[in-house]
Image (cartoon, rainbow, N blue to C red; front, side, top):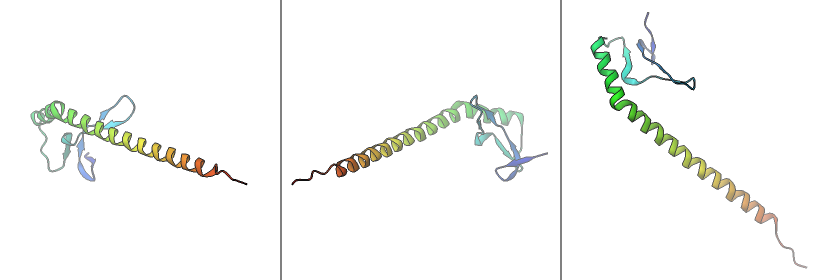
Length: 95
């Protein structure tokens, strides 16, 4: 029985990752209108292993680097805000 595949009938191959998460490459997804053949599947798998995996790694790496930069910016903003608050609370009063 076909399983839902992005809201359509079809099937997909899911790779289990040791941390418990799963990954399903787009080119290993078959929709109802697609014709499955073993040779076609191996071609798709070969293409995924040849360049898809590296592209996926580069995409994930770029996302990680962007999140790291965003975290650093937020941390700096919090340090600046804390510093401003501390400086404003230490006003010198002259008599």
